[in-house]
Image 1 (spheres, one colour):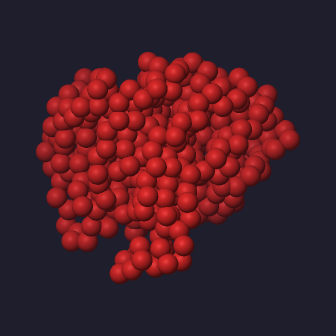
Image 2 (tube, helix red, strand yellow):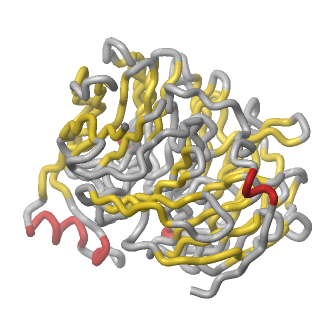
Length: 439
């Protein structure tokens, strides 16, 4: 691949990536303490495999692409047991659906939350939350348990899209509250919940309705609901999105920033009032979580032609004409989230093109091809980045001026859940099991 060499002192400032301080023993939400894939670990193993550096492997029944979250030595994740549909049921369910060719049908699902002891890998809770007969079809690359839980103060919040949201006591496994918000996601749930102060934030960008919802984290009662900007698309399939919000601080004002189809918006966490909006084009099914780097919100525009866009989040109202800083279309992802180190950005496309960019102007510093296909978002540990592929390969890349591949490690396929880092250990979920990897 052609290389573009631009040297930046920020490459050397490996400790300056944090928006918030990072806890060493908890991984409370999708993409970790700061929501952007950063960890404080410096000693994760570079080389590992089924028989090397694996402290334990715990099988997980069912299927789910939710990432593990960890607090006080307890790991929580979600899964769904699927009852296959008969051929007759499949034909009935998909009749007249223009997207029938890319949908998978189940006769029933049982959604579950699982708690695993960090030290031993022993299952502490295997909770059956609810069974649904005749669920909506999903994309075969998705699952009925793709949103990552969020954990705080001995409570874990598990969301399954329109199948419901549960608040569970993370020690006893008891349900504290349950709420169901019905939205047509068409191909299954995707957005992960986050916590902001006393509120649980859910993104409900379906084909029929699009809004951001804040629930009281103690009771599950609705605190506010923010409608998304109107879309140009008439077809609901082009209005849906699956991104996870990011909380940032801009000039002393906190914002909840979350992309949607066509628009990305910043919201006031207390009231849900829209602070700013930016029209990014015709992109939809936006899945990557945005990042905050060099004073810019950087996000993917989703399908059909993904681009990575950087916007200043310091405006009010419609900032489309004034606040774009740069836009890149080479190698942009539709599923994996980018990651920033200093003022550089690393992103891997769905098909394995790894790019390093200068966050200030979007210039591409280099591009290389990794093996395989990608949905999981990378994590950082010290001067290393970890990129898991669908095929079960975890490529470890050094943080350096030039491309530096340190190892290619083979686990079992498929790896589509984003990893977690806890202390000096790496948690990786495959299609069938959860691995704890460490020295």
